Amino acid sequence: MPHSAGSVTRSPATAVAVIPARFSSTRLPGKPLADIHGRPMIEHVYRRAAAASSVSRVIVATDDLRVFEAVRAFGGEVVMTSPDHRTGSERVAEVAARLDADLIVNVQGDEPLLAPTMIDDAVAACVTDPAVMLSTVRSRITDPAEIASPAVVKVVTDLRGRALYFTRAAVPFLRDPGTPVTWYKHVGLYVYRREFLLAFAALAPTPLELSESLEQLRALEHGHAIMTVESRHEALGVDTPDDLERVRRLLAVPAIS
Image (cartoon, rainbow, N blue to C red; front, side, top):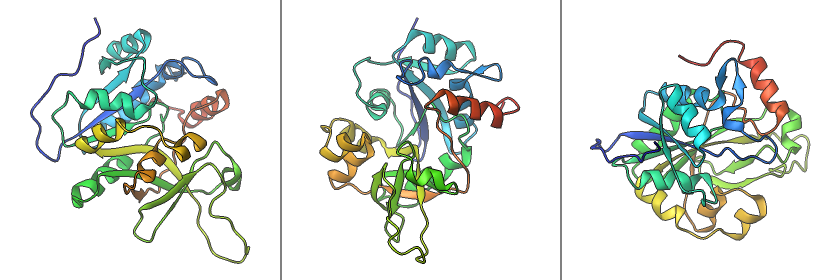
């Protein structure tokens, strides 16, 4: 039967990864259970998160019994959560409220190519600087088509790496073609201090968040800083059947064992 996460005693630097996984998807129904080389996508994500050296525990948070049973079948830890959450962060916060951990890693359930070091780098940003309440990951855009694509979320930062804005638009705008500029895509991986996550998830949605359909803008609109770390690894979220086929081609062998 579905069960809830229990409280455990953790050291202050312990990070627990929580993977929110909804079965419903407008463009790709049943996405967490999509088959990739004989394993459901959620298993690929789970194993990659578990391979991160900074993570002591991985939990899938779902509102669907089919996902719950699939995770149990491969030996993963999974909990049932409310079906009423508006965002992944709210689902993760429900689980985090019952955990005794300083850092909570929100790992997107549709990132089967996630590099474990992305998690480690984002966790390190919080561990090394106690002032960082929330960190995330960015990577350089190398495909010009991604700059104009609204499906690829761009992030611009200040000189220290703190996010100034996240958007689906082609930002920064290149007025002079001779000006050197680097475009960054946002990788939807977040590391929260637990107390910050619980407070953040309780905030009402904000205008820019609703306009762009990007929940991280809620933090910026409320004046909270988001530290970003650059990763050399490529990330590919699965939102469409074409994305799924691309991942299947790239993952010619099973995910990390």
